[in-house]
Image (tube, rainbow, N blue to C red; front, side, top):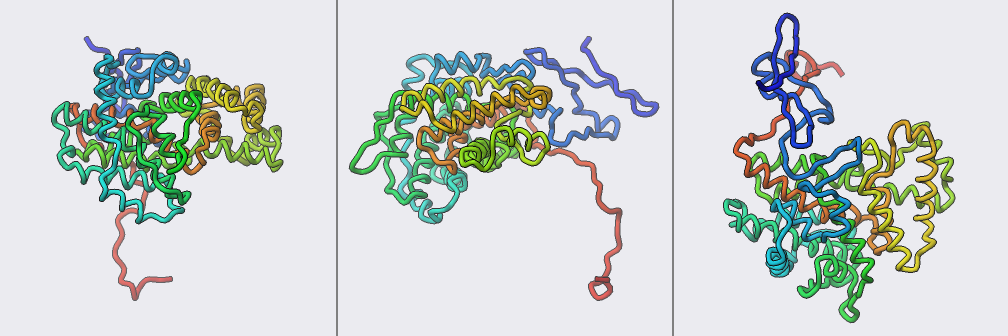
Length: 429
């Protein structure tokens, strides 16, 4: 007999099924609660609400565990590539050599933008946010491939996934070039995924940019650790929009808009701003710590909604940041030194350790992007490129699930009772 939980409301007792996940996670299934009792659950921010069953990513915040399809993030960061990790998330298994080669070929075929779509960039001011441009152009991609609005076959889905994975780099790089008034650099099919992106970002018509191996490796790691993170704000947005049977392009565009927020994809910008304030002498590390404790400022890059121990992604990026800066001759980068001092101060303060406020993925990701020459307005865009495989995987999981219903949360109304309409001439000011 299946285990159940009992809910007692007045004289009535309701039995609710208990659902157990493959990693032992337990949930009380309240699907029929309103129908049976007339009650709903109230959970602002959905901190204790499971919105779906998913086989994509597992997070254990108490133990600092992150796995993609069962593979530890540490293993993938050390042994895998971004494309291989993306294929794992999107298609469910690590690819064979031939499958990876075929997908790389498909990515190369899809990296150029339709000529008519190029005019889309002209409609934005040079000062326009790269995230706004990325969202708009991603949404427009579908109009050039209307046959991919309905990915009813595996081949169509594979093509749609490759189109998004490949073109997102091109769009991001073009948006950046427009913002700085430089000519657009077209993709080079012969280059790898990350190398090609850096080429489009920083090459000039008369001078091809040749990034260091360490730079390409650091970017690979950045993208891998950002590839998915369970039911976060942007992922949940993609799934919610997709539940209406919106197409993959529109759903991903909605995820980009959700990621745009300072508390999500913009958090690493806040980290850099804090470090720069300390560098300029506007704030010392001890003053920063005290202002956080007295709630005068918020320290971005510390603490996490899920992780109650050290974020495993932060450990990976911390090592990558030191390695990259050493290779580039920036062994004494002031922001890295300040970041280390700030981390040490926080980890030795009972206020932070008692509240489990440890460095998260945003704390070191901004330092890596800064070392790569990527400006802060592009930070959320880089996050979006990394997170794209996860969004695609979650959209497809929702789309393929025969039990999916359009997402429709309930609410507890706290507004005024029924009121009589008063004609405008009788209303008191």
